[in-house]
Length: 400
Image (cartoon, rainbow, N blue to C red; front, side):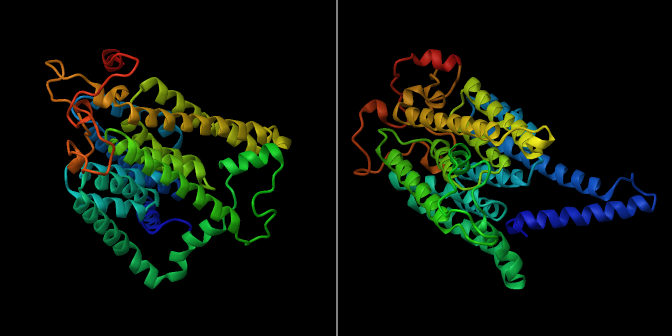
């Protein structure tokens, strides 16, 4: 099976429920339908619940000042298009649940949820990287080790039994990912589409591994992570958890050889938490969702009144540029926390709360940076101090 273990078990459980329902329908006890329709309904009900959990966890992570930001997650055009495209809502529920557990200072539970998320789709494991950087900077490494241990134990508890009992089936996910060529939605295919480039490995025979492409994608992602590490350690004020998490997941998608359309769901809650600018986010989400139209027209083929490949790859390029733009804005606000809407909300009777450091930070929220690990900071850079405005007044940002 081409999915990680937990996604495969979800599909299996949904199949068993669908067959039981179908048997009940044939016996006249339940409403009937085609078995495949029943299966889809069962799967969709579970994925809808998973996305509701994603919204709930994300709303809890926004803090008391900006709970309405979660509406962007619930109403995202990407959710309307891709909620049931694949099983990624399971992973987003675990990922955001893990970050919520971290925010509530329960690092072991956070690790367990992230490990289970990695057993559904691998991306939740990436969130441990930003937590490592921020915990190192703040001298909170004990909490990170607890989370990392919880993630490893949870992932192993789900995977080891399947790996032992069904080694070939368990390894199929990893084998297929190793063998996959550049995906139609990847930046590599965009380049190939417009230039005629045949890829790093040239034309591949069936079953041949694109070894060079695999190495390049891993190298580019590693380089991006080094850059994000530098951002996390050199910013005068410690970045928020959601900011670094968004940058890591976006870097993975941009450099990876595969960007399946539903992968964009991974970015939705993280983008809302990292950069809660409604118009900017809605513009990106709409562009990303609309990529679906030329994609389907391209798959029709020109002979069937479809679109040429370049129409599709051009929209993919626009989507990639939009995500890069979001990353640039997040990095700008990391270095200029006065422009961060989460931290820039002014204290006072309207808000009734102290200045915000990091609503998702958990043990990092309000923690001082460990001496000697970051540049010297002035009083205005300390956690809990009102951030210094840059260019635009804080009041204008808060009104948005």
